[in-house]
Image (cartoon, rainbow, N blue to C red; front, side, top):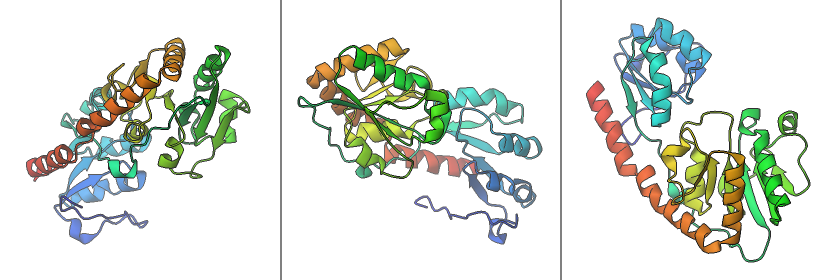
Length: 289
């Protein structure tokens, strides 16, 4: 909207509005929007697609085979590298990189003070077993067995996750999706553990944690590699053993934990620069006009 765009939610009748004739249309990977592509193409529209994942979804594949996009905007180099081989088969090689917008004012910087209390490690994910791999609970449990006074705090956990990770122990508190805002959740965490069975694209939860003053311990792969400088703005853990050692170190060294939080907050000026992001969009719109 700030760039002069009009927002349109696709109607259920499958007919795009008349005013879209010869327009540049930005699509955010919704299946319902993809169904309109053939008609939009007939109307002379240029189609700019923003994929969500590091893989092509079935509805995207079905659409692109008959109506490929004009250009693609990726959120991370991880996503761009993963998708490029697929999009070239549709005849598309124009993949741009523009970071997603992020408003830091929604996540005020307020690191949860450690004191002598239990070390609280959080995890956030949607209702998807791939977002809650068993190694999250294993890592926390192993740290507890090493003598750490630890408590887990999960947001987005549902009983269906037990089929993958088993029943949670009493010392891990869990909250269902939508029961608490992310900033309220992060305000009660000393660190955030980010493990996933997906190759993550550009996890917003990392930016939320950085803005809030919560150090992140994440998978050493995917988009996390672009968001975190290991040992400076967070922790990149190649395996569970590394994550456990880093968790123990953060719990025992409050100065280190707060230094990581401060550096991560400063890093957001680069990762989520409103000026850079808006300029990139305006340049792209100008190039495609």
